[in-house]
Length: 448
Ligand code: UDP
Image 1 (tube, helix red, strand yellow):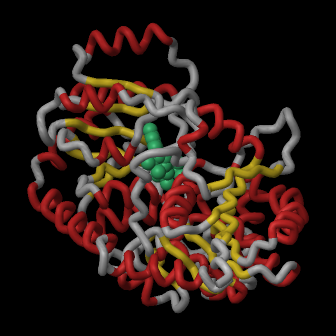
Image 2 (cartoon, rainbow, N blue to C red; image 1 turned 180 degrees about the vertical axis):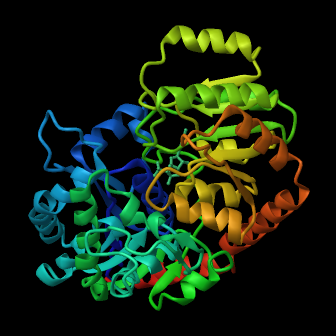
């Protein structure tokens, strides 16, 4: 009898940290089910990931890390999302075609932010599943963008024409539509909107839309999508790489062990949020004033102009009550019993990871889908509170101190967070909705 061939899938993330991590987590699940995965990073990110990995042998057999150029020059900023969106299709398309042909790949799982790759279905006949690194609500909003333009809420350049609440699930202000607030310039905003409208036309080529969410949490949004399969929350692999671009500082876990249960504020704003110096100081003072212990992730590029001396002086002020590190194993931190709440920019991964661990949120969104996720947390699931800006656009130390006290004193919020956690855990257990959906995905991908 001929041996069954190992099912083989190419995975294509958008080259940013919040996209590489969940697609790596999905790849680990598929490797556990016997798949061979070709994980295609840009050369820039591939090099970063391998620098972080002290032990390259930690990558499981079956997961092959490949790379192709991103189309930017050596002097360019390879983390500039707006620029990457513009150059990636031309830089990658024919290289992907070649790779798919030479490796005889039958399936690609492409990040929704790489929807242009759906054209590969036409050119090389590969079958494609899209993976949404955003909520199902944001995917539904994306498909509804032409209607928002038709209704005169936005125009085709991304300018808001009618200031009103967009009453999808969850409700958001028209200015908070991701592709409106994403562009740093009018030109980029126009490009983003046009890009979404153009790639929306290709969606019929996707055999399925995989979402890192679960049915019980996004019931309404999922009902708007005929072809979506929620498989989340995707859990970080217990060992091996998750595609981090920065090394994890594991000392934070031993520090958390010394803290009282339910006492620590975990403060982290994902991989790309940048604070100006005055807002940085306001946050530092707010945390000190809160009187609670805190674990604060300050990435190397988190702010400009803070000297090494400042960290030493600040540590003296907070008398060791706070720990600042540059990158943590976030899912392990969130699952630690000492964590009381998560002060977060509300990126979708952070949102769903916080949900999975039953942690109440203090929401501090900056751009893209983060406002939509904040609306879910504060208005729909009611497991978070919003940190409000003053008239100057600053979240003050007083606001931080007050909201921390308010959140930690609110038993109802904690109870709702614990209930949502229970639903999340149930969905990924054997027989749960996301678990069953993952098996459906596996069966589909086995059609080689
Ligand atoms: N993350 C981490 N360590 C940190 C901070 C963040 O591992 O110190 C991970 C986090 O668990 C999440 C991802 O980085 O999976 C950030 O994704 P998210 O969508 O929350 O934000 P983005 O970086 O895309 O803005």
